[in-house]
Amino acid sequence: MKEHFIRKTGLGRLWELASMKKLLIFFACLLSVIGVVFSFTPFVALWFIVRELFLYVKEPSFMDVNYMVRLGWFAAGGAIGAVLFNFVALMCSHVAAFKTLYRLKVDFTRHLASLPLGFHSGNSTGKLRKVVDENIEKLEGFIAHQLPDLAGSLAAPLAVLFILFAFDWRLGLASFLQIFLAYALQMMVYGNKSSAVFIKNYQDSLEDMNNAAVEYVRGISVVKAFNQTVFSFRRFYDTIRGYGKFVFEYTMACENYMTVFMVIINNVYVLLIPVIIFISGRPGDYFSFALSSVFYLIFSMALPSVFLKLLYVSQTGRQIADGIERMDKILDIPSLPETEYPKTVNNYEVTFENVTFAYGSGREYSEVRDVSFVAPQGQVTALVGPSGSGKSTVAHLIPRFYDVAGGAVKIGGIDIRELSGEYLMSLVGFVFQDVFLFKQSIADNIRLGNEAVSMEQVILAARAAQCHEFIEKLPQGYETVIGTRNIHLSGGERQRLAIARAILKDAPVIVLDEATAFADPENEHKIHLAFERLMKNKTVIIVAHRLNTVRNANNIIVMDGGRVVECGRHGKLVAAGGRYSRMWQNYTSAMEWTVAGEGVPVHV
Image 1 (cartoon, rainbow, N blue to C red):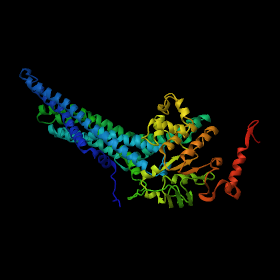
Image 2: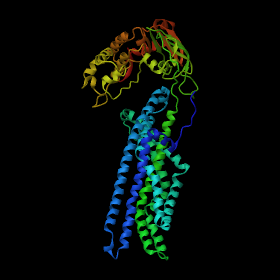
Image 3: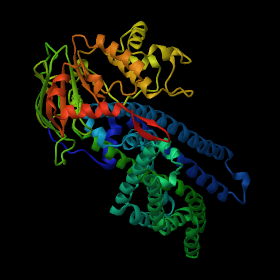
Image 4: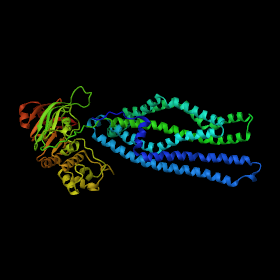
């Protein structure tokens, strides 16, 4: 049993992820701190140079030129040292960032692949794309740039405070109070709960826009076909308007605080002048005070960059932390459980025993209810029924895209939950209506069925699936990359490539979800001939919408309302006069209709 643990959140979680490469991160932070210390040395050297000039302003001949030159080299060395240490720090942090990012993306995408198909059906690609491409990607910027900056920015105030109070505590206190006031204003705006709520709402609005944008782009053909614009695509338009309104209102709410903060932090030297004038009128060492005043006026100009960097790092860190929390929510979703003692099968008969299943836990009804049937090895079993009857859901349960709520799906008498995921995938080959092709070569897309095969075997599989002829006509043949240079395939061509994958995989159990839906009559006949060879001695389950494709099936399972209502061969079911017989009559009647005249259906 897995031990329960509470995952860290916020900057603690960011640090936990960054510490995957602890040694590199340690050196990056250490070198960044050293670089910050070096960056202040020119100001210290400048103070001693000004002091030397003031001491011998009336007698320049007594000035120690060598001492001044050494101070100049000290200042130059500090500037060069700051650059070098920061450069090496960034090198270490970038190496750590890229290695962490690689590991995190691989782990996250592997986890996505292990989740049930129901998760992907309920979560849009826009949302998942944002997590992978933006939320995780931003972690690279945090580790590579902001983490060293954070270490340097935390060290910088300490160095600043030391320098501020080292020469004249009164001027140092005056400078410090202004900085404290500026950050007190910032904490009023960004350090409270409303800031965390804003960041969450900000990320939510970005996800909504991503989802709507993906949907809009995918449906652009429909939008153009009906002569519509983005304004008519209401969801996309509303998410853009909502995002703009939300960000604008929050920005206006923070405007006054941010303005005061920027005025104070960028003009410390202006507010310091009245303090200098007030103190200079009091008795004391006027010469030393004048030297300190010059130093503080010069040093105050360096303060904005130090504290603005700290502000930027903290704000960006909160945004990245919120994005990582969204990633963690997905990582916390349990994968399909794997058995500790996986079994193997000695035959490939598929059995459904009182199977019940519903999409999601909150549904009031089941898509599949008490379904039982046997698909014998070496035979073709067809699933037919009206839309929404559950036949495609049954097909998805065989390769365990979902876990059943009740009953069991078995292969060779073994519950598929007792098989390892990898072994189960090796047993089942499938071709669904929705065919996804990667932006790779035709050959590589076919090889997804079996990456170890030779080019000759790829061509044989393509010939069997009736793909070879149209592939040869493409610019680079089998090396043509899909989706480039206006290379796009029709629905039928894409489906035949998917069939070639299944042929190449040569799995003992074949699941076909209307595999010939996009084929013309000529190619449909050829594909069926190819399937006769593919199906030999295999368990075949066909989800059929066109009933003529399953007339010769060994067994036809008729589904309606998620239940099995009839089963048997075509002739027996037609003669029975039940649900299948009515479906067959409607199908054959529809085949006799045509369009004539001015678009009026006419029976022939």
